[in-house]
Image 1 (cartoon, rainbow, N blue to C red):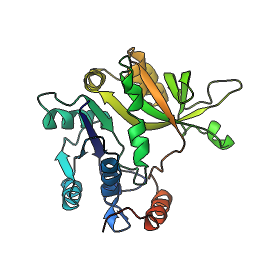
Image 2: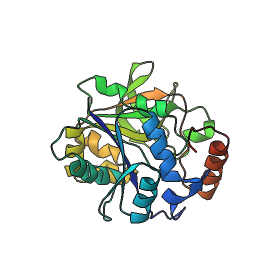
Image 3: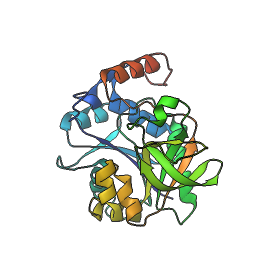
Image 4: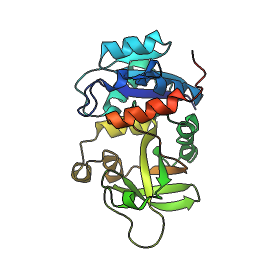
Length: 248
């Protein structure tokens, strides 16, 4: 299937202003994300941004960028605008949305997000990790997947929540917000209005479930580091300073 990896990037971060251009081991953070996405070898990689300085930095490091509107409410809206501009003839079948604040993500994890789409009944694929730290089970910032097991490494998502769920004995799963969409599913999703549960939980993916779309989650072994704070940025710098990323 023809696949396009899109990385939405915006400069407006309240906790870490200018986040996409934060220097990590001699390159902007958004460039590290593009490198990891390219290493996944799934297809074309493009950064979708509303800021010219971000596009310029991406292109200066040999990657592709496209300018999008500044008024998008979500990353999915931004990547849909980018998709329609980059592929007006509809040749791309799968769109992978990789968040622009994951500079240390394992390329294999990006590839794993595609696996559930081997089932034609799946509209959207995503990722999960079993929660092992007790404090994360009750942390509302750790989004949980409530799902029906399909195998040892896959769930059919029934709900996403910030609460501790499901109740009872058994594993809990941390949702990783990386998505692989069938093109038609992304087009349908962005046309939907925000749903009641989405607004209540502040979780965009609930809009798809409430509309009857199917989301399956591939279970992987580790949660990628999301850079949201100066402390996270320091951690990413430490990791990438000691990693041979194969770039000058």
